[in-house]
Image (cartoon, rainbow, N blue to C red; front, side):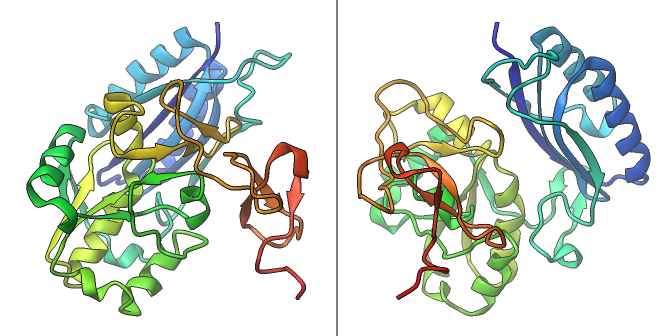
Length: 297
């Protein structure tokens, strides 16, 4: 049986993040789980993987902490186990305390209470998103809240994809006024599991965007609901050993190899070790690519 992967987050005030870090670390080590967990005074953000029974125990124990009781855990299949019995999708367990659980570089702008982010966009479940599009048509703007390279292999149809390398770049993009022409339109922010849009939608609203929504549960929940028969096109980039996943057979391949132009959803690291960009490159063209930032004219 394949391991399972959990993706989850919760925005909620945490009085002692380091105590939560120690508890989560010990719980994962006891259960043999690997992954990445980030904790701050604003909440928790995590992706962990392991054997099914252990994962169920982890969910039950985590929910026993009152601020985490209503976490929306998103399940997906992992790739397999290594010789030590650990998930192949994660090389190790990392549990850290940081200023932000998703790094926009603006912790002073974020306010949370027991209900989550204060001032974020209105939540839309997948079916409600379709209803909005049916009512408002082409006025609805899909705004990608991920790094630009993620959108190269999958995105919502006709989405606006900001040219950002990291989440930190969004604040400067918004402050530069590049999207001010969208302030009077219905804007739907979306990201992998929903966490980045919790913050992004609040940043947009505080900068004068009048009608801002966030896709509740992110692309993951949308894909579980509509598969390949909705408004999503392509593959979903994920930050673990799987690299990319789809919502069933027959998914469109919208990525194009940067070397030969063939259709592919394969992403590789830039050949420059100092560069954090990822590039679409098919298997036939190698394992590393020189991205546009380092190409020699």
